[in-house]
Amino acid sequence: MVTVALDAMGGDKAPVAQVAGAAQISLDPQGAHVILVGDERRIAAELTKVRHDAERITIEHTPNFVPMDASPRHALDATPDASVAVCARLVHEGRAQAMVSAGNTGAVILACARHWERLEGVRRCALAAVIPTERRRGERQDPFSLMLDVGATLDASPEDLMAFAVMGSAYAARISRNPAPRVALLSNGTEANKGREEIVQAHQWLKVHPSLNFIGNVEGVDLPRGTADVIVTDGFTGNIVLKMLEGISETVLELGRYAYRQKFAWRAGMMLLSSGIKQLRELTDWQEYGGAPILGFDGVCIKAHGRSEERAMANATRVAAKAVRTNLVGAIKEGLARAREIKQPVQHPVVVEPALGGDA
Image (tube, rainbow, N blue to C red; front, top):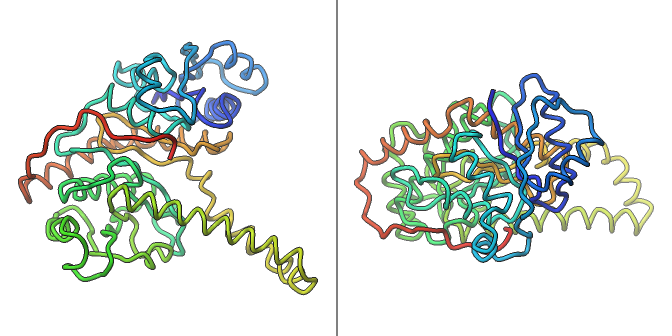
């Protein structure tokens, strides 16, 4: 059985949502063993409130955690036994095979960087995110595309972009059960020569990678359509796109509320559309997906949204366990080896730790 280290103290709803999610997993015959990492007294108190299988939940006590608004580096320097760091250490020591956290994004990435090794061929890690699309994909008819990077590597080289493509493709193939995910570079035009120099060079390498279903460049308009299953970009661009999409979603909901309040005819129209809106919300519910991966390390880490509740935490843990069972890291290693055969990467100075902000 896969063991997942779950950061019980990371996130806006901690430890309530984390403990409830772990309890749900413990009752699933196909679930995982969960190590809840955090304040033992608070975790134990929450466990008394939910039905769970005590044999499949372990508590790893640590009194410290990284606040959501803290500086990741300063917080981890001051409290090296913070819950997120202990999770990463448990994976490094082999006591767990994966970790999940809804905590401070920068601290999650930095904890992985300090306790795990980067895979050969990966200069910088990538933080991925799921975005809802019109198109469905895979056995599960998944309505999400995977975009990476969205904030871990702000300035990506051609080698970084190729590594992101390999890692994103391997992840989508296993988690979405999409055997040949369509991979694309985000650019300002679909032509092979459009975009910054790094994108143009990465395009030339990706189109000859033997195990990637590379479809070329896509533009911003293609993202909600689901033209690509995996969208590759640098962290600066990806983070802007992600925040823009979140803003559009919130604006559309607010416009709907405004229309409902203003006129009876608009209210009647909204009522007629209510079943369709509910179905759309269910199809694009990020909590169903659970979380998004931090890729490029020799361990599995799923970063859940800071606002995650019980269902999201349980699903993030399921995704982490599935990534282990399907040998995600091994598949990424194989894809990176083939990438090195295509083009000997340019040598860059080794980056010891990623440059990070707070929770993204």
